[in-house]
Length: 554
Image 1: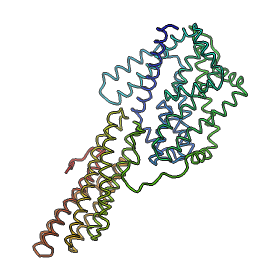
Image 2 (image 1 turned 30 degrees about the vertical axis):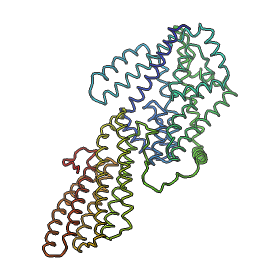
Image 3 (image 1 turned 60 degrees about the vertical axis):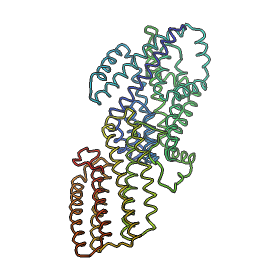
Image 4 (image 1 turned 90 degrees about the horizontal axis):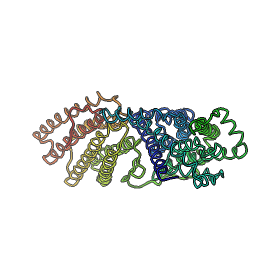
Protein backbone atom coordinates (compact mmCIF):
# COMPACT_ATOMS: atom_id res chain seq x y z
CA UNK A 1 0.00 0.00 0.00
CA UNK A 2 1.61 3.26 -1.15
CA UNK A 3 1.58 6.59 0.68
CA UNK A 4 -1.02 8.12 -1.66
CA UNK A 5 -3.49 5.32 -0.93
CA UNK A 6 -2.87 5.65 2.81
CA UNK A 7 -3.48 9.41 2.74
CA UNK A 8 -6.60 8.84 0.65
CA UNK A 9 -7.87 6.34 3.22
CA UNK A 10 -7.18 8.72 6.11
CA UNK A 11 -8.87 11.60 4.29
CA UNK A 12 -11.92 9.49 3.47
CA UNK A 13 -12.16 8.29 7.07
CA UNK A 14 -11.91 11.87 8.32
CA UNK A 15 -14.70 13.04 6.00
CA UNK A 16 -16.82 10.05 6.95
CA UNK A 17 -16.48 10.59 10.72
CA UNK A 18 -16.88 14.36 10.50
CA UNK A 19 -19.89 14.00 8.21
CA UNK A 20 -21.55 11.67 10.69
CA UNK A 21 -20.76 14.04 13.57
CA UNK A 22 -22.03 17.07 11.62
CA UNK A 23 -25.23 15.28 10.64
CA UNK A 24 -25.91 14.09 14.19
CA UNK A 25 -25.14 17.45 15.82
CA UNK A 26 -27.08 19.34 13.17
CA UNK A 27 -30.18 17.25 13.85
CA UNK A 28 -29.71 17.71 17.57
CA UNK A 29 -29.33 21.49 17.25
CA UNK A 30 -32.31 21.81 14.92
CA UNK A 31 -34.77 19.71 16.89
CA UNK A 32 -32.96 18.87 20.13
CA UNK A 33 -35.00 21.08 22.46
CA UNK A 34 -38.36 19.84 21.12
CA UNK A 35 -37.23 16.21 21.15
CA UNK A 36 -35.94 16.68 24.68
CA UNK A 37 -39.39 17.90 25.78
CA UNK A 38 -40.97 14.82 24.23
CA UNK A 39 -38.43 12.65 26.03
CA UNK A 40 -39.39 14.25 29.35
CA UNK A 41 -43.15 13.85 28.81
CA UNK A 42 -43.40 10.44 27.12
CA UNK A 43 -41.57 8.13 29.51
CA UNK A 44 -44.40 7.08 31.82
CA UNK A 45 -43.46 3.40 31.63
CA UNK A 46 -40.75 1.16 30.23
CA UNK A 47 -42.49 0.34 26.97
CA UNK A 48 -43.39 3.95 26.15
CA UNK A 49 -39.87 4.97 27.14
CA UNK A 50 -38.45 2.37 24.77
CA UNK A 51 -40.55 3.65 21.84
CA UNK A 52 -39.48 7.23 22.62
CA UNK A 53 -35.85 6.09 22.82
CA UNK A 54 -36.12 4.45 19.39
CA UNK A 55 -37.65 7.53 17.76
CA UNK A 56 -35.35 10.02 19.51
CA UNK A 57 -32.20 8.11 18.56
CA UNK A 58 -33.41 7.54 15.00
CA UNK A 59 -33.75 11.32 14.61
CA UNK A 60 -30.50 12.44 16.27
CA UNK A 61 -28.61 9.50 14.72
CA UNK A 62 -26.66 8.75 17.89
CA UNK A 63 -27.36 6.34 20.73
CA UNK A 64 -24.46 7.95 22.61
CA UNK A 65 -26.23 11.34 22.50
CA UNK A 66 -29.44 9.74 23.79
CA UNK A 67 -27.79 7.83 26.63
CA UNK A 68 -25.76 10.88 27.70
CA UNK A 69 -29.00 12.89 27.70
CA UNK A 70 -30.72 10.19 29.78
CA UNK A 71 -27.87 10.18 32.30
CA UNK A 72 -28.18 13.97 32.62
CA UNK A 73 -31.97 13.74 33.04
CA UNK A 74 -31.58 11.14 35.77
CA UNK A 75 -28.98 13.33 37.47
CA UNK A 76 -31.42 16.25 37.38
CA UNK A 77 -34.28 14.12 38.75
CA UNK A 78 -36.36 14.36 35.54
CA UNK A 79 -36.34 10.57 34.99
CA UNK A 80 -36.19 7.65 37.39
CA UNK A 81 -34.11 4.55 36.71
CA UNK A 82 -36.98 2.45 35.36
CA UNK A 83 -37.92 5.17 32.87
CA UNK A 84 -34.26 5.61 31.93
CA UNK A 85 -33.90 1.86 31.33
CA UNK A 86 -36.75 1.93 28.80
CA UNK A 87 -35.22 4.84 26.88
CA UNK A 88 -31.78 3.18 26.88
CA UNK A 89 -33.24 -0.02 25.44
CA UNK A 90 -34.98 1.98 22.72
CA UNK A 91 -31.78 3.88 21.92
CA UNK A 92 -30.05 0.59 21.15
CA UNK A 93 -32.56 -0.07 18.37
CA UNK A 94 -32.79 3.51 17.12
CA UNK A 95 -29.05 3.72 16.50
CA UNK A 96 -29.32 1.09 13.73
CA UNK A 97 -31.03 3.55 11.39
CA UNK A 98 -27.65 5.09 10.56
CA UNK A 99 -26.23 1.81 9.30
CA UNK A 100 -29.39 1.23 7.27
CA UNK A 101 -28.86 4.62 5.57
CA UNK A 102 -25.19 3.91 4.93
CA UNK A 103 -26.10 0.57 3.35
CA UNK A 104 -27.61 2.49 0.44
CA UNK A 105 -24.82 3.41 -1.92
CA UNK A 106 -25.52 7.10 -2.41
CA UNK A 107 -21.95 8.10 -3.22
CA UNK A 108 -22.98 9.17 -6.73
CA UNK A 109 -25.31 11.86 -5.41
CA UNK A 110 -23.06 12.90 -2.48
CA UNK A 111 -21.79 16.01 -4.33
CA UNK A 112 -25.39 17.21 -4.71
CA UNK A 113 -25.96 16.98 -0.96
CA UNK A 114 -22.64 18.72 -0.35
CA UNK A 115 -23.53 21.64 -2.60
CA UNK A 116 -27.02 22.08 -1.14
CA UNK A 117 -25.68 21.88 2.40
CA UNK A 118 -22.90 24.41 1.74
CA UNK A 119 -25.36 26.88 0.19
CA UNK A 120 -27.74 26.59 3.16
CA UNK A 121 -24.95 27.05 5.71
CA UNK A 122 -23.14 29.91 3.95
CA UNK A 123 -25.89 31.94 2.32
CA UNK A 124 -28.73 31.91 4.87
CA UNK A 125 -29.02 33.80 8.14
CA UNK A 126 -31.83 31.87 9.79
CA UNK A 127 -30.36 29.56 12.49
CA UNK A 128 -32.84 26.75 11.82
CA UNK A 129 -32.06 26.73 8.08
CA UNK A 130 -28.34 26.67 8.88
CA UNK A 131 -28.82 23.67 11.19
CA UNK A 132 -30.77 21.79 8.53
CA UNK A 133 -28.02 22.72 6.08
CA UNK A 134 -25.48 21.16 8.46
CA UNK A 135 -27.50 17.94 8.43
CA UNK A 136 -27.55 17.84 4.61
CA UNK A 137 -23.87 18.80 4.42
CA UNK A 138 -22.97 16.07 6.93
CA UNK A 139 -25.01 13.55 4.96
CA UNK A 140 -23.12 14.43 1.78
CA UNK A 141 -19.72 14.36 3.53
CA UNK A 142 -20.51 10.95 5.00
CA UNK A 143 -21.15 9.34 1.62
CA UNK A 144 -18.36 11.26 -0.08
CA UNK A 145 -15.98 9.97 2.59
CA UNK A 146 -17.32 6.46 2.04
CA UNK A 147 -16.60 6.77 -1.67
CA UNK A 148 -13.00 7.87 -1.02
CA UNK A 149 -12.44 5.08 1.51
CA UNK A 150 -13.89 2.46 -0.82
CA UNK A 151 -11.52 3.53 -3.56
CA UNK A 152 -8.45 3.52 -1.30
CA UNK A 153 -9.34 0.15 0.24
CA UNK A 154 -9.18 -1.53 -3.15
CA UNK A 155 -5.38 -1.30 -2.89
CA UNK A 156 -5.40 -3.00 0.51
CA UNK A 157 -6.18 -6.33 -1.13
CA UNK A 158 -2.94 -6.12 -3.12
CA UNK A 159 -0.82 -5.55 -0.01
CA UNK A 160 0.36 -8.86 1.57
CA UNK A 161 1.31 -7.12 4.84
CA UNK A 162 -2.15 -5.57 5.29
CA UNK A 163 -3.91 -8.81 4.40
CA UNK A 164 -1.74 -10.70 6.90
CA UNK A 165 -2.78 -8.24 9.65
CA UNK A 166 -6.45 -8.57 8.76
CA UNK A 167 -6.12 -12.34 8.46
CA UNK A 168 -4.62 -12.57 11.96
CA UNK A 169 -7.90 -11.19 13.28
CA UNK A 170 -9.64 -14.47 12.47
CA UNK A 171 -10.32 -15.11 16.14
CA UNK A 172 -13.71 -14.08 17.51
CA UNK A 173 -12.45 -12.50 20.72
CA UNK A 174 -9.92 -10.38 18.78
CA UNK A 175 -12.67 -9.09 16.50
CA UNK A 176 -14.75 -8.18 19.56
CA UNK A 177 -11.79 -6.30 21.07
CA UNK A 178 -11.20 -4.43 17.80
CA UNK A 179 -14.86 -3.37 17.63
CA UNK A 180 -14.80 -2.31 21.29
CA UNK A 181 -11.54 -0.36 20.94
CA UNK A 182 -12.54 1.56 17.80
CA UNK A 183 -15.96 2.49 19.22
CA UNK A 184 -14.52 3.51 22.58
CA UNK A 185 -12.12 5.88 20.81
CA UNK A 186 -14.47 7.48 18.27
CA UNK A 187 -17.49 7.13 20.63
CA UNK A 188 -19.91 6.14 17.91
CA UNK A 189 -21.02 2.58 17.25
CA UNK A 190 -22.76 3.73 14.06
CA UNK A 191 -19.48 5.10 12.69
CA UNK A 192 -17.68 1.84 13.50
CA UNK A 193 -20.41 -0.20 11.81
CA UNK A 194 -20.11 2.09 8.78
CA UNK A 195 -16.36 1.45 8.58
CA UNK A 196 -16.95 -2.30 8.92
CA UNK A 197 -19.57 -2.10 6.18
CA UNK A 198 -17.09 -0.47 3.79
CA UNK A 199 -14.33 -2.99 4.55
CA UNK A 200 -16.73 -5.91 4.15
CA UNK A 201 -17.97 -4.58 0.81
CA UNK A 202 -14.36 -4.60 -0.43
CA UNK A 203 -13.95 -8.22 0.63
CA UNK A 204 -11.45 -7.35 3.38
CA UNK A 205 -13.58 -8.79 6.21
CA UNK A 206 -15.82 -11.86 5.89
CA UNK A 207 -19.41 -11.53 7.07
CA UNK A 208 -19.00 -13.87 10.04
CA UNK A 209 -16.17 -11.68 11.44
CA UNK A 210 -18.38 -8.61 11.03
CA UNK A 211 -20.71 -10.24 13.57
CA UNK A 212 -18.08 -10.16 16.29
CA UNK A 213 -16.84 -6.66 15.48
CA UNK A 214 -20.45 -5.43 15.78
CA UNK A 215 -20.70 -7.10 19.20
CA UNK A 216 -17.58 -5.18 20.21
CA UNK A 217 -19.25 -1.98 18.96
CA UNK A 218 -22.23 -2.67 21.22
CA UNK A 219 -20.00 -2.81 24.26
CA UNK A 220 -17.77 0.09 23.21
CA UNK A 221 -20.80 2.39 22.91
CA UNK A 222 -21.12 2.25 26.72
CA UNK A 223 -18.01 4.38 27.16
CA UNK A 224 -19.75 7.70 26.38
CA UNK A 225 -22.43 7.17 29.05
CA UNK A 226 -19.87 6.05 31.63
CA UNK A 227 -17.79 9.18 30.98
CA UNK A 228 -20.90 11.39 31.18
CA UNK A 229 -21.79 9.92 34.59
CA UNK A 230 -18.41 10.83 36.10
CA UNK A 231 -18.84 13.55 38.68
CA UNK A 232 -22.63 13.07 38.70
CA UNK A 233 -24.94 11.76 41.39
CA UNK A 234 -25.04 8.06 42.17
CA UNK A 235 -28.39 7.70 40.47
CA UNK A 236 -26.83 8.98 37.22
CA UNK A 237 -23.99 6.48 37.61
CA UNK A 238 -26.63 3.74 37.97
CA UNK A 239 -28.24 4.84 34.70
CA UNK A 240 -24.86 4.53 32.96
CA UNK A 241 -24.42 1.07 34.47
CA UNK A 242 -27.85 0.05 33.17
CA UNK A 243 -26.65 0.89 29.66
CA UNK A 244 -23.46 -1.06 30.27
CA UNK A 245 -25.25 -4.12 31.67
CA UNK A 246 -27.80 -4.22 28.85
CA UNK A 247 -25.10 -4.15 26.18
CA UNK A 248 -22.75 -6.56 27.94
CA UNK A 249 -25.47 -9.09 28.79
CA UNK A 250 -27.05 -8.92 25.32
CA UNK A 251 -23.68 -9.15 23.55
CA UNK A 252 -22.62 -12.12 25.69
CA UNK A 253 -25.80 -14.05 24.83
CA UNK A 254 -25.38 -13.30 21.10
CA UNK A 255 -21.68 -14.29 21.29
CA UNK A 256 -22.59 -17.70 22.74
CA UNK A 257 -25.28 -18.20 20.10
CA UNK A 258 -22.83 -17.33 17.33
CA UNK A 259 -20.36 -19.86 18.69
CA UNK A 260 -23.08 -22.52 18.61
CA UNK A 261 -25.08 -21.54 15.53
CA UNK A 262 -22.82 -19.14 13.62
CA UNK A 263 -23.34 -20.78 10.23
CA UNK A 264 -27.12 -20.81 10.58
CA UNK A 265 -27.12 -17.15 11.65
CA UNK A 266 -24.98 -16.21 8.63
CA UNK A 267 -27.25 -18.15 6.26
CA UNK A 268 -30.30 -16.41 7.74
CA UNK A 269 -28.73 -12.95 7.32
CA UNK A 270 -27.82 -13.72 3.70
CA UNK A 271 -31.30 -15.09 3.02
CA UNK A 272 -33.12 -11.97 4.21
CA UNK A 273 -30.60 -9.52 2.74
CA UNK A 274 -29.82 -11.10 -0.59
CA UNK A 275 -26.53 -12.35 -1.99
CA UNK A 276 -25.59 -10.02 -4.81
CA UNK A 277 -22.67 -9.99 -7.19
CA UNK A 278 -19.55 -7.83 -7.29
CA UNK A 279 -19.97 -4.51 -9.07
CA UNK A 280 -16.73 -2.64 -9.81
CA UNK A 281 -15.02 -4.66 -7.09
CA UNK A 282 -17.72 -3.86 -4.51
CA UNK A 283 -20.16 -6.37 -3.09
CA UNK A 284 -23.36 -4.33 -2.87
CA UNK A 285 -25.34 -7.04 -1.07
CA UNK A 286 -22.95 -7.30 1.87
CA UNK A 287 -23.69 -3.67 2.75
CA UNK A 288 -27.27 -4.68 3.42
CA UNK A 289 -26.12 -7.85 5.22
CA UNK A 290 -23.92 -5.90 7.67
CA UNK A 291 -26.62 -3.28 8.27
CA UNK A 292 -29.26 -5.96 8.88
CA UNK A 293 -26.89 -7.81 11.21
CA UNK A 294 -26.55 -4.65 13.29
CA UNK A 295 -30.33 -4.21 13.36
CA UNK A 296 -31.16 -7.84 14.22
CA UNK A 297 -28.51 -8.05 16.94
CA UNK A 298 -29.85 -4.88 18.57
CA UNK A 299 -33.49 -6.01 18.37
CA UNK A 300 -32.61 -9.42 19.80
CA UNK A 301 -30.56 -7.80 22.55
CA UNK A 302 -33.46 -5.56 23.57
CA UNK A 303 -35.96 -8.43 23.33
CA UNK A 304 -34.03 -10.60 25.80
CA UNK A 305 -33.24 -7.71 28.18
CA UNK A 306 -36.66 -6.03 28.30
CA UNK A 307 -38.34 -8.69 30.53
CA UNK A 308 -35.43 -8.41 32.98
CA UNK A 309 -35.39 -4.61 33.21
CA UNK A 310 -36.21 -4.59 36.93
CA UNK A 311 -33.44 -7.09 37.61
CA UNK A 312 -30.95 -5.00 35.60
CA UNK A 313 -31.97 -1.88 37.55
CA UNK A 314 -31.44 -3.74 40.84
CA UNK A 315 -28.02 -4.93 39.65
CA UNK A 316 -27.08 -1.33 38.83
CA UNK A 317 -28.18 -0.29 42.32
CA UNK A 318 -26.00 -3.03 43.79
CA UNK A 319 -23.01 -1.93 41.72
CA UNK A 320 -23.49 1.68 42.88
CA UNK A 321 -24.79 1.28 46.45
CA UNK A 322 -25.77 3.87 49.00
CA UNK A 323 -26.84 7.47 48.67
CA UNK A 324 -24.95 10.62 47.84
CA UNK A 325 -23.21 12.17 50.82
CA UNK A 326 -25.26 15.07 52.08
CA UNK A 327 -23.30 18.23 52.51
CA UNK A 328 -23.92 20.52 55.46
CA UNK A 329 -23.55 23.59 53.28
CA UNK A 330 -25.50 24.89 50.31
CA UNK A 331 -22.30 26.16 48.71
CA UNK A 332 -22.12 23.56 45.96
CA UNK A 333 -23.46 22.89 42.47
CA UNK A 334 -26.11 20.22 42.21
CA UNK A 335 -27.20 20.07 38.56
CA UNK A 336 -24.35 21.52 36.50
CA UNK A 337 -20.70 20.64 36.15
CA UNK A 338 -18.03 21.66 33.67
CA UNK A 339 -16.54 18.18 34.07
CA UNK A 340 -19.35 16.48 32.10
CA UNK A 341 -20.56 19.45 30.05
CA UNK A 342 -23.01 18.38 27.33
CA UNK A 343 -24.47 20.89 24.86
CA UNK A 344 -27.79 19.03 24.55
CA UNK A 345 -28.63 19.47 28.24
CA UNK A 346 -26.53 22.52 29.15
CA UNK A 347 -29.50 24.91 29.25
CA UNK A 348 -32.01 22.55 31.00
CA UNK A 349 -29.45 21.75 33.69
CA UNK A 350 -28.62 25.44 34.10
CA UNK A 351 -32.33 26.20 34.54
CA UNK A 352 -32.57 23.56 37.28
CA UNK A 353 -29.60 25.11 39.07
CA UNK A 354 -31.05 28.62 38.70
CA UNK A 355 -34.37 27.43 40.14
CA UNK A 356 -32.47 25.97 43.09
CA UNK A 357 -30.71 29.32 43.53
CA UNK A 358 -34.09 31.08 43.37
CA UNK A 359 -35.57 28.83 46.06
CA UNK A 360 -32.61 29.62 48.29
CA UNK A 361 -32.91 33.39 47.75
CA UNK A 362 -36.68 33.44 48.32
CA UNK A 363 -36.37 31.28 51.43
CA UNK A 364 -33.62 33.56 52.70
CA UNK A 365 -35.87 36.59 52.30
CA UNK A 366 -38.56 34.89 54.39
CA UNK A 367 -36.04 34.05 57.12
CA UNK A 368 -34.71 37.60 57.17
CA UNK A 369 -38.25 38.97 57.53
CA UNK A 370 -38.91 36.52 60.37
CA UNK A 371 -35.77 37.74 62.10
CA UNK A 372 -36.97 41.34 61.70
CA UNK A 373 -40.60 40.93 62.75
CA UNK A 374 -39.95 38.41 65.55
CA UNK A 375 -36.66 40.02 66.67
CA UNK A 376 -35.06 36.60 66.32
CA UNK A 377 -31.32 37.22 66.31
CA UNK A 378 -30.48 33.49 66.15
CA UNK A 379 -31.79 33.19 62.59
CA UNK A 380 -29.62 35.99 61.19
CA UNK A 381 -26.28 34.08 60.91
CA UNK A 382 -27.94 31.49 58.65
CA UNK A 383 -29.26 34.34 56.46
CA UNK A 384 -25.73 35.70 55.94
CA UNK A 385 -24.36 32.20 55.34
CA UNK A 386 -27.01 31.49 52.71
CA UNK A 387 -26.27 34.82 51.04
CA UNK A 388 -22.66 33.67 50.63
CA UNK A 389 -23.96 30.50 48.96
CA UNK A 390 -26.16 32.57 46.64
CA UNK A 391 -23.16 34.70 45.65
CA UNK A 392 -21.20 31.49 44.97
CA UNK A 393 -23.98 30.12 42.77
CA UNK A 394 -24.23 33.45 40.95
CA UNK A 395 -20.55 33.26 40.03
CA UNK A 396 -20.52 29.56 39.09
CA UNK A 397 -23.75 29.59 37.08
CA UNK A 398 -22.64 32.70 35.20
CA UNK A 399 -19.31 31.05 34.34
CA UNK A 400 -21.19 27.96 33.17
CA UNK A 401 -23.48 30.04 30.94
CA UNK A 402 -20.47 31.86 29.48
CA UNK A 403 -18.96 28.48 28.59
CA UNK A 404 -22.26 27.29 27.11
CA UNK A 405 -22.40 30.41 24.96
CA UNK A 406 -19.15 29.33 23.31
CA UNK A 407 -20.72 26.10 22.02
CA UNK A 408 -23.27 25.40 19.31
CA UNK A 409 -26.45 24.78 21.30
CA UNK A 410 -29.84 23.62 20.03
CA UNK A 411 -31.61 26.53 18.32
CA UNK A 412 -34.37 26.88 20.93
CA UNK A 413 -31.84 26.74 23.78
CA UNK A 414 -29.70 29.48 22.28
CA UNK A 415 -32.75 31.76 22.05
CA UNK A 416 -33.16 31.78 25.84
CA UNK A 417 -29.50 31.63 26.86
CA UNK A 418 -29.16 35.41 27.13
CA UNK A 419 -32.25 35.59 29.35
CA UNK A 420 -30.68 33.18 31.83
CA UNK A 421 -27.92 35.68 32.62
CA UNK A 422 -30.61 38.25 33.55
CA UNK A 423 -32.48 35.75 35.73
CA UNK A 424 -29.32 34.84 37.66
CA UNK A 425 -28.69 38.57 38.22
CA UNK A 426 -32.29 39.18 39.38
CA UNK A 427 -32.11 36.31 41.86
CA UNK A 428 -28.76 37.52 43.16
CA UNK A 429 -30.26 40.98 43.69
CA UNK A 430 -33.17 39.45 45.64
CA UNK A 431 -30.54 37.74 47.79
CA UNK A 432 -28.91 41.13 48.37
CA UNK A 433 -32.24 42.59 49.46
CA UNK A 434 -32.68 39.67 51.88
CA UNK A 435 -29.29 40.56 53.33
CA UNK A 436 -30.43 44.18 53.67
CA UNK A 437 -33.51 43.02 55.60
CA UNK A 438 -31.22 40.98 57.89
CA UNK A 439 -29.19 44.17 58.49
CA UNK A 440 -32.44 46.00 59.39
CA UNK A 441 -33.28 43.19 61.82
CA UNK A 442 -29.84 43.39 63.40
CA UNK A 443 -30.10 47.16 63.76
CA UNK A 444 -33.60 46.91 65.25
CA UNK A 445 -32.48 44.36 67.83
CA UNK A 446 -29.33 46.29 68.78
CA UNK A 447 -31.18 49.65 69.08
CA UNK A 448 -34.30 48.06 70.60
CA UNK A 449 -36.54 49.45 67.85
CA UNK A 450 -40.14 48.23 67.53
CA UNK A 451 -42.70 48.60 64.76
CA UNK A 452 -46.25 49.66 65.51
CA UNK A 453 -49.03 47.10 65.04
CA UNK A 454 -50.15 49.00 61.95
CA UNK A 455 -46.67 48.86 60.42
CA UNK A 456 -46.35 45.13 61.15
CA UNK A 457 -49.72 44.52 59.50
CA UNK A 458 -48.65 46.47 56.40
CA UNK A 459 -45.36 44.58 56.17
CA UNK A 460 -47.18 41.23 56.39
CA UNK A 461 -49.71 42.28 53.76
CA UNK A 462 -46.96 43.33 51.37
CA UNK A 463 -44.81 40.22 51.93
CA UNK A 464 -47.77 37.88 51.39
CA UNK A 465 -48.30 39.36 47.94
CA UNK A 466 -44.57 39.25 47.18
CA UNK A 467 -44.29 35.60 48.32
CA UNK A 468 -47.03 34.62 45.89
CA UNK A 469 -45.51 36.72 43.09
CA UNK A 470 -42.08 35.10 43.57
CA UNK A 471 -43.58 31.61 43.63
CA UNK A 472 -45.48 32.19 40.38
CA UNK A 473 -42.47 33.88 38.77
CA UNK A 474 -40.13 30.98 39.43
CA UNK A 475 -42.77 28.52 38.24
CA UNK A 476 -43.20 30.47 34.99
CA UNK A 477 -39.45 30.53 34.47
CA UNK A 478 -38.96 26.84 35.19
CA UNK A 479 -41.87 25.60 33.07
CA UNK A 480 -41.74 28.37 30.43
CA UNK A 481 -45.47 28.92 30.83
CA UNK A 482 -47.73 31.99 30.66
CA UNK A 483 -50.15 30.55 33.20
CA UNK A 484 -49.70 33.24 35.89
CA UNK A 485 -48.75 36.10 33.59
CA UNK A 486 -51.77 38.33 34.24
CA UNK A 487 -51.76 37.58 37.99
CA UNK A 488 -48.11 38.60 38.30
CA UNK A 489 -48.74 41.89 36.54
CA UNK A 490 -51.65 42.63 38.89
CA UNK A 491 -49.62 41.67 41.97
CA UNK A 492 -46.62 43.74 40.89
CA UNK A 493 -48.90 46.74 40.39
CA UNK A 494 -50.47 46.10 43.81
CA UNK A 495 -47.04 46.03 45.46
CA UNK A 496 -46.19 49.39 43.85
CA UNK A 497 -49.45 50.85 45.17
CA UNK A 498 -48.83 49.34 48.62
CA UNK A 499 -45.36 50.85 48.76
CA UNK A 500 -46.70 54.34 47.99
CA UNK A 501 -49.69 53.99 50.31
CA UNK A 502 -47.68 52.54 53.23
CA UNK A 503 -45.03 55.26 52.88
CA UNK A 504 -47.79 57.85 53.19
CA UNK A 505 -49.24 56.03 56.23
CA UNK A 506 -45.76 55.98 57.74
CA UNK A 507 -45.47 59.80 57.40
CA UNK A 508 -48.85 60.19 59.10
CA UNK A 509 -47.74 57.95 61.98
CA UNK A 510 -44.59 60.02 62.37
CA UNK A 511 -46.56 63.27 62.58
CA UNK A 512 -48.88 61.68 65.14
CA UNK A 513 -45.90 60.45 67.21
CA UNK A 514 -47.00 56.83 66.82
CA UNK A 515 -43.42 55.82 65.90
CA UNK A 516 -39.98 57.27 66.31
CA UNK A 517 -37.75 58.53 63.50
CA UNK A 518 -35.19 55.68 63.78
CA UNK A 519 -37.90 53.02 63.40
CA UNK A 520 -39.47 55.01 60.60
CA UNK A 521 -36.23 55.02 58.62
CA UNK A 522 -35.96 51.23 58.88
CA UNK A 523 -39.61 50.86 57.86
CA UNK A 524 -39.21 53.16 54.85
CA UNK A 525 -36.04 51.39 53.64
CA UNK A 526 -37.73 48.02 54.12
CA UNK A 527 -40.67 49.00 51.91
CA UNK A 528 -38.27 50.17 49.19
CA UNK A 529 -36.36 46.90 49.32
CA UNK A 530 -39.54 44.80 49.15
CA UNK A 531 -40.85 46.82 46.20
CA UNK A 532 -37.60 46.15 44.34
CA UNK A 533 -37.86 42.45 45.16
CA UNK A 534 -41.26 42.43 43.42
CA UNK A 535 -39.69 44.14 40.38
CA UNK A 536 -36.97 41.49 40.17
CA UNK A 537 -39.58 38.74 40.57
CA UNK A 538 -41.52 40.19 37.64
CA UNK A 539 -38.30 40.29 35.58
CA UNK A 540 -37.84 36.57 36.26
CA UNK A 541 -41.39 35.79 35.10
CA UNK A 542 -40.90 37.67 31.84
CA UNK A 543 -37.29 36.56 31.23
CA UNK A 544 -37.87 33.73 28.76
CA UNK A 545 -40.97 35.37 27.30
CA UNK A 546 -38.81 38.44 26.64
CA UNK A 547 -41.79 40.77 26.95
CA UNK A 548 -41.05 42.69 30.11
CA UNK A 549 -41.64 46.39 29.41
CA UNK A 550 -39.95 47.59 32.61
CA UNK A 551 -36.75 45.66 33.24
CA UNK A 552 -35.37 46.61 36.65
CA UNK A 553 -31.71 46.45 37.62
CA UNK A 554 -30.72 48.26 40.79
